[in-house]
Image (cartoon, rainbow, N blue to C red; front, top):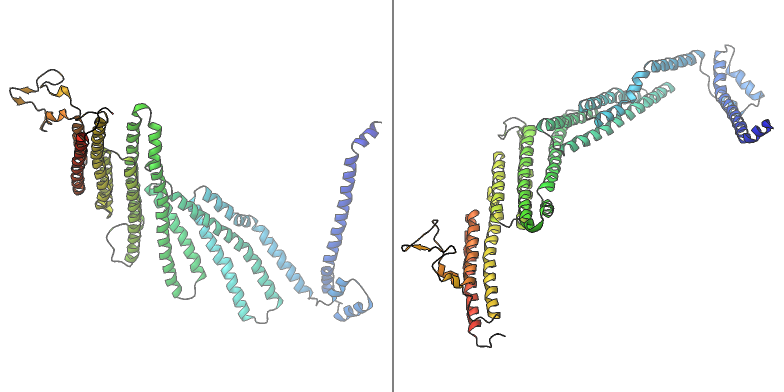
Length: 537
């Protein structure tokens, strides 16, 4: 019963094992048949070659008398080489295999070169990666180019082309396929290395790190030039072509450097000095009654911080470019002065574009977030310091700041005056609506004493606490006009914090318009008051 139970439980296993054994036997039989079919002609060839009594006529007679397989019939038509040639061929193949086995470790190292370079690129081992790239050029020069040159010379010398030359050509092609595969993989890793080096320039790097990256990129360009030099060794015109390629590579390296550093500077300014960052900081810092003031101060701090960051990064990039690619401002009389002129022109275009971008961003931030002249003055000082700093590299843009700050200053001052005028007009309108025949009159302003009960005059002399003349106290009898005058004086006080000579004509014209508007408002109020009508409606 136990045996029966076990057989029942494991019946499926027994059936699967039996099926596998049958399948293995069938596959072995097919393999034996295949080996026999493939090796039978070769064995027959070797036997015939080693048989001293063999002759082609005997083979023809046997072929006429026997009807063997189709393969044997086809094989009989192939000419049989002598035994010495067959043995020499076998000995050569055996020697080649032995040499291959002896160089097994070296071949493994050769095939692992792409993976090794990939690991070097990922680990930021630039020197080792560039050494592997140079070794790839050596492999290409020794094995691919020499093989192609020898094959081309063989074709020229042997026009008939026997079987031995064809075998040698096939062996060269096989070797070239392996080496070409390794070299192509290393070329792909070179592209990865270049992308990684340029990506590192998009980060915050110091001057030594930047010099290291640019040196690695130049060595990578040298590897490319060496590869082109190996492929173009025909005439002296190739040298001139290589010189042009080298100049183009150097220019491209400078462009890639400036583009990568552009990404770095734009990322920093977007996070710190942009309008969106200022608005977020203002919203996060605003709370209670002090929300507006704290929000304004936060916006001002963000703008000033953005200007400082932009100045520091622009000056750092210009300094790095001049130290790496140019070295000095004065043009050199040597043959490389043309390249220096090109690099200086490229730097000039980049600097002009960065300054224009900065001025556009600064103008939008000032119009949106600067509402007092003190903050405007701080921003002007920061921008002026930025412009003077860039003047050390020939990019002083102080004259371009006035068209940005002067209209904003004029707008702020005239805005204060218009607020005072609108307040006076609203007060006069409220008085008319209340049925009061004249403007409001302050009764406390008729006495000669101030709020403390002391006399404002001492022995006929008026006490003044400063050089600024005291306002006429009679004006306090007219509160709407006094408030308007306070707004006007407040605008002038704001103007004292940030004096810009270029804004004087616009402010004067605004002042004349303000006086004319105030006169018209008072005349309209007088006509409305003197118009007969019912009181108290």
